[in-house]
Length: 111
Image (cartoon, rainbow, N blue to C red; front, side):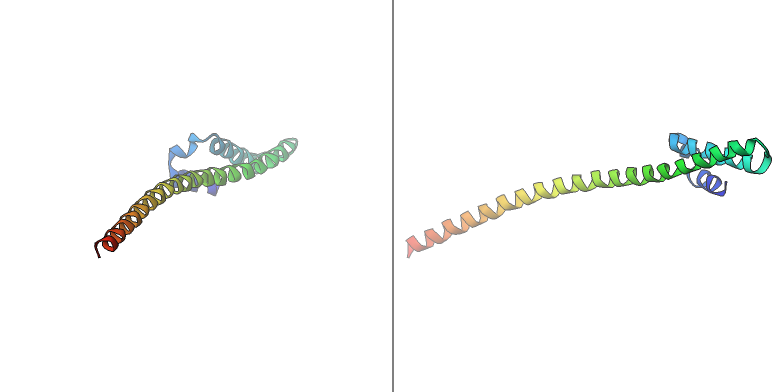
C-alpha cells in the first residue's frame, strides 16, 4: 500500500494512464482488503491475489523494457548523426589532401 501511495504522490494521477499501473493498483488494494478484512473462504480468494501479485514482476520487466527501448532509440539516432558527421569529415579530409597534392605538384613544376 505504501508503494501505491508513494507512486501516486510522486507521479500524480497521470501515473494511472498505464494499464499496468492500474492493474497493479487493483491487485495491491484487493490484496490489502482481503488480508486485513476477510477470513474463511475468502482466504482462498486471497491466494489468487497472491498469484496476481506475481504479475507485478511483469510490470517491472515492462518498465525496464520501455526504458531500454527509449534509450536504444536515442543511441541509434546519435549513431546515425555521428556517421553522417564522420562521412562529411572524410570528404573534407579528402578535399584537403587533394588540394595539398595539387599545391605540391604546382610547386614542383615552378622550380
